[in-house]
Length: 161
Image (cartoon, rainbow, N blue to C red; front, top):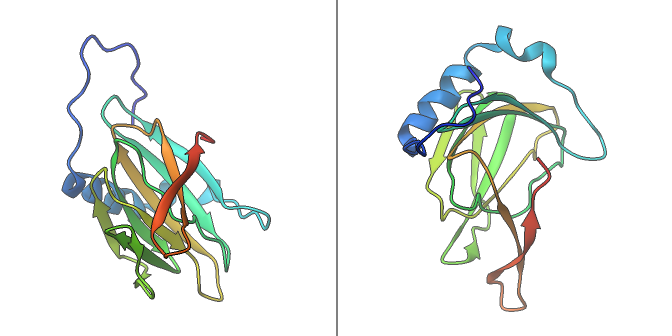
């Protein structure tokens, strides 16, 4: 993908369904990204693969027990495809985290709108790799923590990328 900067008008965001197609398409071509994958025991590893005016694509690796924690993607919609291994996603419906969530195996794709809060992690015994797409490109992520009543509340902003 081409990196574009300095456009005269903002791009129209890509829909979650189209982000899912992008993530799946990239995940199905490991020859384009497999040599870039790294694993870090202290924290999750990630690398941006592509940045366009209307979306971006990220490569993430996961060792066992690595999780994102509950977060959203600011104003961005998103999608991710499991390219290798197994991940578990737990959503927060009405601010309450799902207890077990859903297990996602290689080939699974999830997409979501901008108001979506979830936790993604590797609960399996082996490593995993996923491809993520966001539109518009990420500018903010909010982290969430559970209050005493179990409802998630915004706990901070992450601008680490």
